[in-house]
Length: 409
Image (cartoon, rainbow, N blue to C red):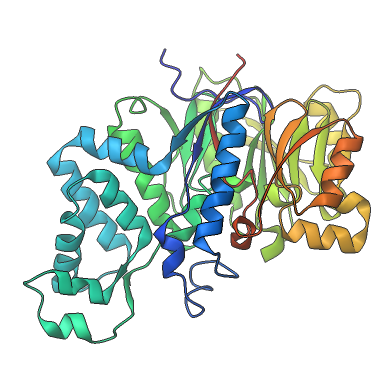
């Protein structure tokens, strides 16, 4: 079996990871579009790229292979040929919300003018301003002059967090319906990867973006070869979790026995499970105080006749983790070292949104110095990276990564 996807743990030694280096999409963010595009501030692209390069190089120094989103999608289009490329552009324009047939044709012509598929993918992510239509000779001036400065095709700035549109589960993947329509084009990219990329076209799919319920990868954590935790959050619906669990358990080759659905606050600052909890070692989790008091956790297991059984667990998060991970004791390391002001400030900048390279080794923003020091006191090695601009998109190192291959069974 081809090991294109192999992920049975959040902490097993990392071999290959998916990233997206921020690009011109950040330059097409404006104060008026921030809310629609799910950003709070406008990052400075030059510095964001420098920070991201430091991040990637830190992973390489640990022996990790980097795979970039733009390369994967371009390679899928290369393999698919002209017909697939044409369908990709048409679908992209439609999912960007262009309803006018004439304007859609002009947008198609503009995108199709990028002959190299890597340039095409980068342009799709960057967005298209109405004035760019002037580059096409057949566009009437009416379409190229009115609403000057308006984005005809919105940028996709959130894709620097590739954790959300997909999740790797064992040897399979989930392809997500995103909570916000503006982000669904991200999962469209990966739809083409898993259909046409010659290295990934045999991957088992446990959830499809065509489902009616939203789910995002920031809520999904593979805790062991038997246990998956999923947050019931602002962006992941219970019905999505149930659908995923049914599909997972129908695969008789999968090793997973339990899906733990954890109900977290429905708030912007707690948008995903990984904003309040990530695993950093065999017996250690970094957590935000708010999740420690959560008592609403559901065990989902395989039922009869293709259905699932759902049982509410009446135990603390710590006790649940100890039980399902077969550990005598789990240490919960508090954000901000438990100090309220430090915790609120650093949680906003993703202090517990940590990416584990191997057991007891995590990558974190240097700005979250209180939490980082608390982790060190528990014996965790913290690889610090600058995050003054990357953190502006409300994404930490866990958000900015999707493990493709980790060691283990």
